[in-house]
Image 1 (cartoon, rainbow, N blue to C red):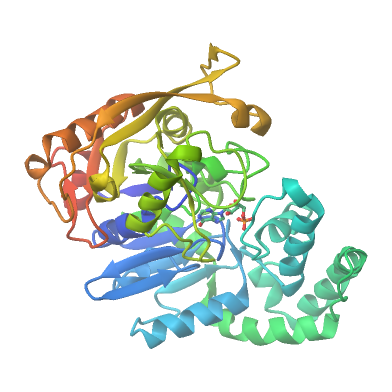
Image 2: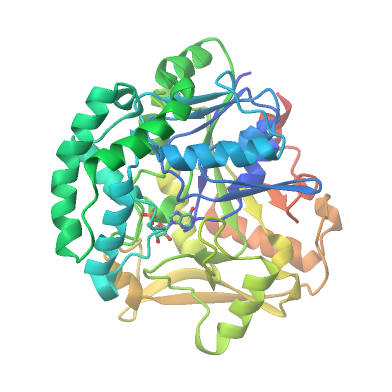
Amino acid sequence: MSHIIVIVGAQWGDEGKGKIVDLLAERFDIVARYQGGHNAGHSVQVGEKSYVLHLLPSGIVHPRKTCVLGNGMVIDPQAFREEVTRLRAQGIEITPHRVLVSSRAHLILPYHRVLDHTSEERLGNERVGTTLRGIGPAYEDKAGRRGIRAADALDPAVLRARIERNLEDANRIIVAYGRQALDAERVFQETWAAVQDLAPFVADTTEYLNRAARTGRSILLEGAQATLLDVDHGTYPFVTSSSTTAGGACIGSGLAPHRITGVLGIVRTYTTRVGEGPFPTEMLGEETEIGNLIRERGREYGASTGRPRRCGWFDAFATRYAAEINGFSSIALTKLDVLDALEEIKVCVGYKLDGRALDSFPAVAQELRRVEPVYATLPGWRRSTLGVTQWEELPEKARRYVEFLEREIGVPIGLISTGPERSQTIIHQHSAIAAWLRD
Ligand code: IMP
């Protein structure tokens, strides 16, 4: 059977999607990204080698897999060129036969990066803490019908005219914030040079993916960022500017909803967040030390920006919300081994606001800042689970922790990751994930 599976992070990102996509990619023909840009950072460990990916899907480290950068993405042609150069130097084959960039994907231009800075400056204390890669401003241009798509940029006359027009508006804001106006000709020359390198990869990926689906090829649709950063369903306005959830996979790839055969949620045994915004289970005050321990054990520093991630307890209330929105068929639980050192582990099972238990996830960031998490406390196992590959070999208390999370989320956990390498994984043989890997 050919599967078309969407992989989505259930929390605020960095759940360890890279490893899981890499693991599944072995059995799939095509790996496609459907949103976001080089704000993402996936680390994939293969034996001694470690690859950091920002734009290219994690399937790229597998020879013979086709990788697609879908129409829902925003692509900085200079970042694309840098990533291709870096990966080629690491021995990865990157050719237009195996990497296709949607002609409908929008481009990030140098002024988008500057606008990302001015927008954050303007927000002051209310800033989002973006990656400053120009993601938001590029999506603003897309929604404002001013964007420049990969296909548009292939014609130098169109590219120059659009840059001139868009830069007139952009420069007004840039100058108002005391920065130097950008020169249209220079922006054009820089962009045009990078577009030359992008051009051979540009293709009609909507047609490509639909033909692949019709002819029974299997496709992994790889989400970036995660559910709580979704522009509609996340903790608005502290979100990214794209549809990160499973519904976004159809929009950002051009595949119809009925084509999707499963949705895999990536859930980490604890929670992190980079950037600003509410985070109910964050380890603060006397729990700061535990947060620091988790950050070090879990290497919780941004792969894109190097920023230290804020760490917190597992939030089952938020994850149930993510499971509902995405319709997870199965869950991959990552980084179990990071918790090995803890004596006790807390899990947030509900939220209270002004003393009342909430039955839905708050829409307003100010409310989310005020919620009181309701915790259950479970005993830690204080034994190494690093590299364990069999469920029965996990300490009993670790198994109880995993089963507790499964009950709280209400979705079967089919895979447990016990270390960064492909082999450091437990797969339940009767799970949907096992079937995706087998059939
Ligand atoms: P932007 O996507 O750069 O506009 O940033 C918006 C928010 O999303 C910020 O809080 C970022 O820290 C967060 N964000 C963007 N990309 C990632 C990611 O790959 N992992 C985790 N957070 C991210």
